[in-house]
Amino acid sequence: MPEEEVVDAESSTLSKNTSPVDHLRHLIKVGWDPNTPLITKFVDKYGLDEELRELINASKV
Image 1 (cartoon, rainbow, N blue to C red):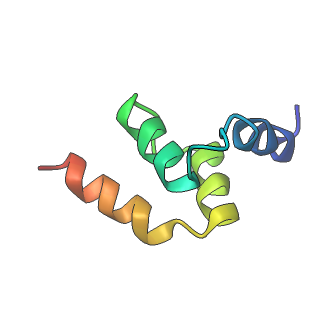
Image 2 (image 1 turned 120 degrees about the horizontal axis):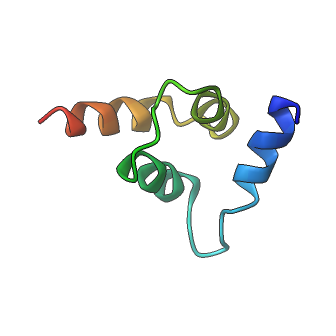
């Protein structure tokens, strides 16, 4: 499956009541590596660079 299709599939799991930031927070919380291509493309797609940095820094505490 092409990577773009994977990102679109992951984006489609967003519910109407969940924002991209909340979804990213959930993915990181359940153990997704922030450096995976899927997370990287999701962050790029929704412009969540700063939010990802904050989540990574918060997980180091």
